[in-house]
Image (cartoon, rainbow, N blue to C red; front, side):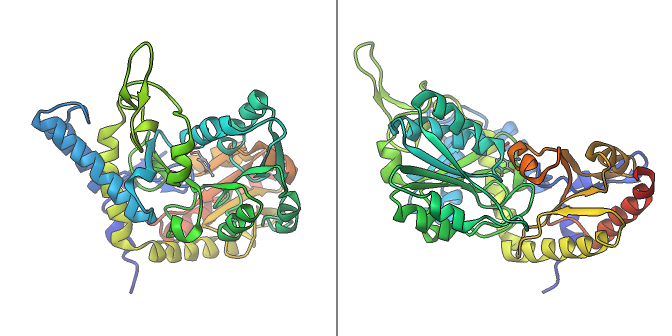
Length: 405
Ligand code: PMP
């Protein structure tokens, strides 16, 4: 079946705009994807017809808004094949989901316990554990990468031991595109008696995720990277662990009864959802998942992979081109530098030609250090990108490369 990219593009009005008089070529998809009409219309519909605070009112609007939010919880459960909606916690994003686990599950750890991370983690999967290191005295172990950007699995095995309590690893690297062997990572982590958290921020829009098949204990992702609204995300957690864990934040919604002598907490998942959530965003997120599934994650991934390979092959013919991350089966992300040109200059010049890429350390400074660079330029593909956009990007690179050397 052909991939009807032109049809899908019509769902994203932003793709029609121009930048500096040039048609926009949006390749900053690993930072945030664009949002289709189906989702934006749903947001408008909710604001105009159903907006009222959730889980609070007996009145019709509140009940409708609550039903819409809870319908998304069930939609997410089905999307990642969790066994129950009690295991789906809405957060502000991946970052908050990881902070929740590091803070709450982390409070059950003791001095000298070990948390295993990898050098390719986003700061969102490093700093919360460093805060725990300061608070509790845990020890961080960091798995290195091999030359092609794949994880050093030998080193990982050697770091698992009696004191390993948590392993927290990205499913897909936001810089290298490396797809980590997460099922194997989970299996080995469990063998060592640890719980395993997967940062799925870069995977969820590109690959089907089945948390039961993966056997992951925690899995985190953000809606804005999957054609959904900004400001919401999901933490999947294994029920047995969520039940053990103390609340992350206190406030309305997460309690059963409050008195100054004794407060009891709500059942899952509400125990972890203090305060008014972004219930409009959550309700509209439903349509983003519908959108992805209506096209099919495998078909989206095949399309993106084709664009990435096509682009990368041509980039390699440009003198001085350096590509970071060439692991087999990598995701549709290309991190690069042109010779010793500064990533910022490359990004600025590309912008003037209408091409939006990401530049900098990509919130992965330890990885930049391991790669021996300060930053890179990153192009990341989404379902609405086309070969003709790849050609524009390559033409722009060919034009600016001589200026930069
Ligand atoms: N982890 C990875 C791998 C990411 O790419 C990102 C987003 N750049 C995050 C975590 C953080 O996601 P958010 O900012 O949506 O919380």
